[in-house]
Length: 227
Image (cartoon, rainbow, N blue to C red; front, side, top):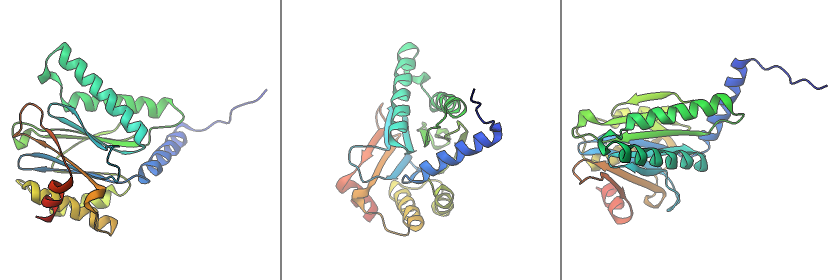
């Protein structure tokens, strides 16, 4: 008769955390920053079709780092939850906080009950009618949630990125200034200037109609970065 070796719970959680962090560190970074008209999301992503930044609902966007198949699965689940809640109640009842809580519960369950945790960090952002009503929820692989203001950095070098973003951030930035601060932070941490074709950018712009999400790519992105 075989016996399974005993592993203390704290050691098991530590091993899972280290495994998840190593997986996340292999991916490329994502940053988000508030600007005068909404929220900017910027990611290092050479793929033109496998997006790290996506729309979830009218005012809500999603960003992920780590293993693509896992955060894409979470994104699809979030879209379904938002559509169901909006259809059952009302569009105004779909909020970033509701989605962040759902993601937190799902990731916490996966982390504690499955052998392999998800190797992801995700961000759920919502643009409000005014700057003080913006919301940014950063959810880690173990289900931990942080309510952020101003800027967020995700990925293996998030601490270094956060330091750089803090230096470049101030309230009321224009989109061009926010983009400059975000790209400068990425360039400083990665020690190389990111090329336009390797960047993915999108905004939640409160000045738009019902759907606030808009991708920025190609010539427009190059013009904004160039100033």
